[in-house]
Length: 101
Image (cartoon, rainbow, N blue to C red; front, side, top):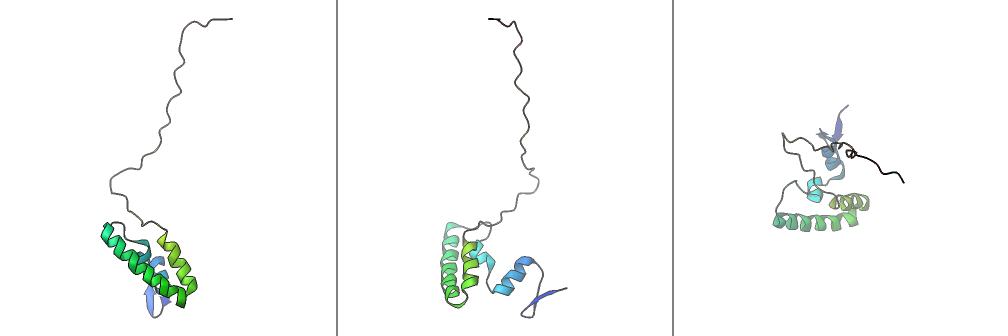
């Protein structure tokens, strides 16, 4: 079954959401890498779009506002293994004579 929204075929869940809601998710979440100036400009536009959405589509505005609080997905560099905690051996028990009381 194909997911068709407004005559467009959505390939991914993200694309389906963008088509169904009529908003660009990256406008609210941001790309993985952007400069401080790019981020400020993007957030200015996002706030303007959010203000318009609050008047025309309050439910979509609530969703978009929640996206502003998320972090962009940053891909992990290829070839780097994830660090895992390695269990350390128990402290060696000191050998020697014990004093009895």
